Amino acid sequence: GQQVMQIPQYQHVQEGEDFTTYCNSSTTLSNIQWYKQRPGGHPVFLIQLVKSGEVKKQKRLTFQFGEAKKNSSLHITATQTTDVGTYFCAGRGAGNNRKLIWGLGTSLAVNP
Amino acid sequence: AAGVIQSPRHLIKEKRETATLKCYPIPRHDTVYWYQQGPGQDPQFLISFYEKMQSDKGSIPDRFSAQQFSDYHSELNMSSLELGDSALYFCASSPRTSGGHTDTQYFGPGTRLTVL
Image 1: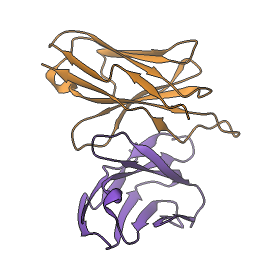
Image 2: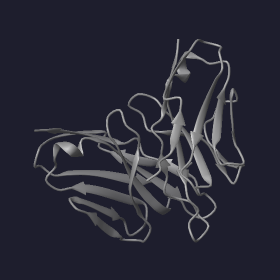
Image 3: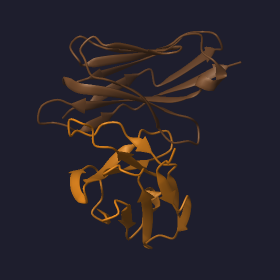
């Protein structure tokens, strides 16, 4: 069945360093969503990418959707302590398979 | 802005007891999803409802059932509780987009269920 692999599982950075998490799907996606979950909190929607090769920015966050619509990345420039949390990607299948499959998440820790 | 409301926020039950979790979606959202999240894990999709009908089914045990009511709120009923059912249970809601597909999910704060 469809799988979404997310790496790395954990990332520990110094404040000011950059951070990237990657998602790879075993099948072509119709879209991919990114969520952030703070410790003790609930997942919060960040963005949705739909088009092949799409790049979207939110302040220090840059989201990319691969040309084949099978992979995606989230890059944070100059991390801050407020970026701490777990970042999940969730890919929605294409065609008849419309299930939303979640990656296992990347937990980001930022040292001040 | 109104958010998804879940109740109760915390629930402690004994093994073999039953539990009912409630979810009130954001107004005008007609799709509700239920997720189970264990410590350090990703949200596991249980079940979803669209316009009061079950729209998709995930890894929901047979001991669990859910429904969506005419006011769009949803309830997750859990019976014969087991220790392994201890987890955070999230409800999320989605609006219908202009294309008829729901995508963005807005999560509630969750219900933390502890089974002793």
